[in-house]
Image: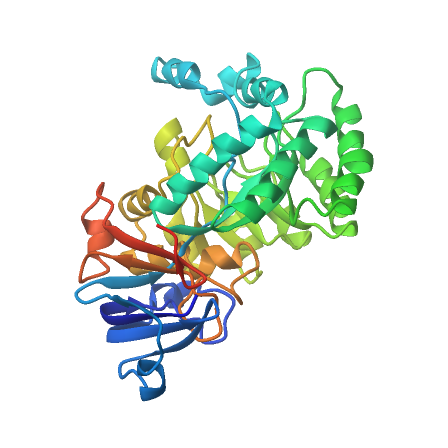
Length: 410
């Protein structure tokens, strides 16, 4: 895991200068270095610069010639639902013919449809399917990924999903972070209060005892979980050492953002529907706004007002939200293209949004998300001399190599 990447035409470092994330005007700073090299030792970046020191040149190590190529930090997908069985292609067809996401959900399609398939699936099947999706994500440049439960809606199946995620973290070539999303929807076979009690007093204590999740998430929307329910769930999660994240403002603004910030959420995700109160609740907090433009594309709903967030100095991350119902794509490069075209983010803002800010949305920006000495050697090499071409030449994967902790994995 000692590696020298030599002669790169461009290295996009996304350096933080000591910050956890980039916000406002700083979200456009990518720390570009031209005609430079990187040395990774024992999985961590040891040196970065233009003139390779003689001490490194003498070493008998693996070398990669990056002449006329562009180097970036590994991409981080901080919001996915990659553990599932079955598919919802029939619902996709229904939406094309005019049914809305909410109408399908009310007819016990949507999330509940996937819940049925996941409850029936054996753990080994879920793991096999999820690993295939992780490797697909890697092929587009993802070196760190988050995965949620939430398709169980009972203790047994939520635990099964989290076990799969933890095993994938140990066995797959990249870091896989685990999020408990029991509060994704209400199951058909319990009352709302019964299910919330199961989350509070059965699921959360057991998950914490077995150390199966780092984060706790919930879906705060009309017809799903209310603000008061979210606060109760987050309070219990925090008590057991889980870090809050929140799905909110996808269809309505009902106070989820304010509640998430008050609970110290590390990120709020979706945010397609925003008002001035929501912006004000985020401004000045350390909560990252994680935007999911592939959902807007797939469901044909409004796109998040990214420019308002950036203008108000709110750190913006991007993620795929890969899932069977509203974003059936693990292609993070597609997410980047949509961010530029539909969210009106510039290319530099977009790169920071899938690297250092995405790392901040997981609380790991001290360890990854930028190319800086001391950080993990998670690096991408693109077969193009200029970073802009990665998004400009859309629909084409120009990725040459994926490096995780100094080891080439793709």
